[in-house]
Amino acid sequence: MILEKPQVRHIFVEKFCALNVLDENGEFFNKLKALIEETYENAKQRPVVLLPHSMGCLFAQWFLKKCDIPWKKKYIKSLVFSSCPFGGSVKTVKIEASGDNFGVFLRSPLSFRHVQRSMPSLTFLFPDSRLWPSSEPLIITPTTNYSSADYERFFKDINYTIASRLPNVERYSLPC
Image 1 (cartoon, rainbow, N blue to C red):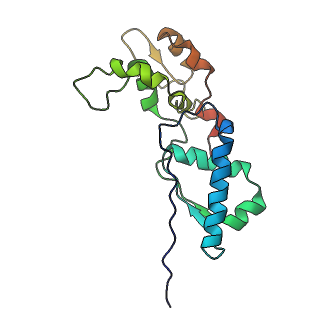
Image 2 (cartoon, helix red, strand yellow):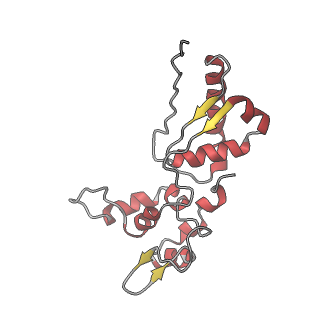
Image 3 (cartoon, rainbow, N blue to C red):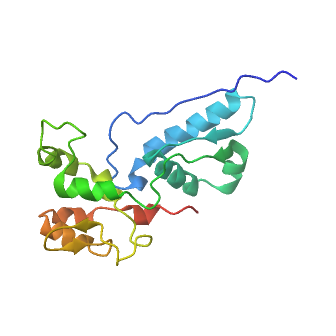
């Protein structure tokens, strides 16, 4: 038996994705659908395996939720998530509060915070309050602790109230 070399196609998001809302990425999803269909045809009509990583998992999940069942049965063999932040990411809370210097110790994390706050995907990835108990603090300060139930107060206290109006992972996450 001779095994054919599998065809691998890559799709990269070339910048830190600003997710105002996943629904607004329709053009990306149209191109992804076309790529999957083209790959299916190039592979002699064999369904494809999707292997998204990190935030790409949320994109893939949302994309597949929007596709009808017959299309998925025809074109998708399987979906394998790698390092998916389904419940959000605690690190994003730290970044919104004090920034992240990415290990560059010559600069204060606060010097990066302004730029990092311009990336709505950070707020999008806040820990999902349906999965993080309100009794568990995510942020501990000398005067106040904040849990997943305290995001609005947290944003007010760090003078970043616009963040409370941005979408978060709760709207899009949790496997179907």
